Length: 193
Ligand code: GAR
Image 1 (cartoon, helix red, strand yellow):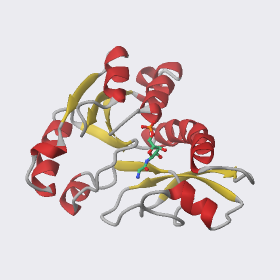
Image 2 (cartoon, rainbow, N blue to C red):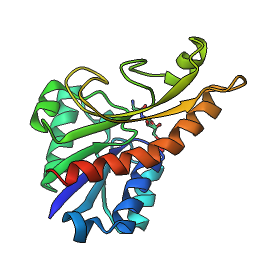
Image 3 (cartoon, rainbow, N blue to C red):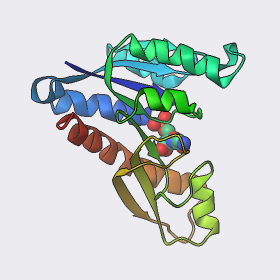
């Protein structure tokens, strides 16, 4: 069985979309894969509750409890590796990972970013797209490399930017598409892993 470990920091709506797709599309039978665990760097992340309600193992590794990034990443790695993952999925995980962590999961660590990469890596993507006068925005699923929001692109979705959009209205439109492309990209990847 291929284990998927999902890392979150907050609401976990992408995680929930992946869990839903795994159930509805019967990944266990069709792809020999399952969501084995959901792990957050924030003990109060709403998504942990959602995952527990879906019967998935959860854990929190609180970044505030560690002196530096290296120590946090080592603890996170130990927690992730307990589940022997074939795929590690960042889904709204808002911590920058050390090169050592990224190298450890080379080729099996993916992320979703709320912009059309390579445009707008980093934070505040929606406001930056509006400020630049972009006519379209979107989201990107990509392999994670040591460079932030880089790595081979696996899937993208495009949405229009409307004249009276705010960062929030645009984010909501993009998020709807994230929920479609992320499970699809993971399903595609699992079938070749
Ligand atoms: C999503 O829009 C995701 O693309 C973004 O955070 C949101 C998490 O929502 N990720 C990043 O900004 C990563 N740098 P969710 O917790 O409801 O899935």
